[in-house]
Image (tube, rainbow, N blue to C red; front, side, top):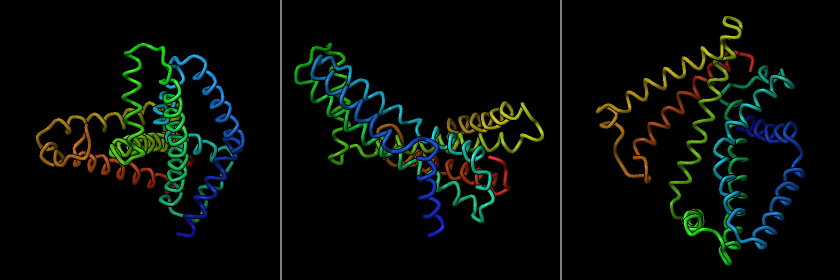
Length: 252
C-alpha cells in the first residue's frame, strides 16, 4: 500500500509537471470567475450560467484526456516507468486515482461557479423563459447534490466517465501491443477488435438473458441497479486486459 501511495503522489506531481504549475490553473479560474461575475451582473442574460454548465458536462472527457496524455508523456519523458518493479495494477490504478481526483476537483469548482452565476443572473434575468426554465432545472438538480439528493446521478456521471477512460486506455494499449506486427494498421485493427466486442455486447444487452440477469433493483432514473453491476463487470474486465498488456511491458 505504501508503494502505491508513493506512486500516487508522484503521479500527481508528474501530472502537474507536464500539464503546468498549479498557480496557472488558479490564475485561469480566477480570471474566468472574475469575468463571469462581471458579465453576470452586467447583462443578466444567462450566458455565464450556460457556459459554466457546459464546462461541467465537458468534464465527462476529463479522465480519458488525462490518462491518454499521461501515458503519452510517460513514453516521451519517462521511459523507465515500465521498468518499475511494480505490478500493472499499481501503475495504472495510481494514474486512474489521480485522474479521478482532478476530475472531482474540477467538477466541484465548475459546479460552484454555475450555482453562483445562476443565482446572480436569475435575480434580474432578461433571458428567454424557455432558457431560464432549462437552467432552473439544472440549478435545482446541482444544488440538490449538496443537500444529499440525486447522488446516484453524480455516481452515474463519474462512473461513466471512468468507464470511458478505461476503454480508451485499453484501446491505446492494444494499438501499442500491435505496433511491431501491424505498424500503421494497428489503430484501425484495435478499433475494429474493440468495436466488434462492443457490438456483440450491445446485441447481448437486447436479449432476454440480459434482462433476466441485470434488470433488477432501482438505483437511478435511467439504469437498473443490475445494470450498474454489468457496467462494473465490463470495467473490471477492461482494466484487467489493460494490466495484462502493461505487465507484458508493452511500450505505452
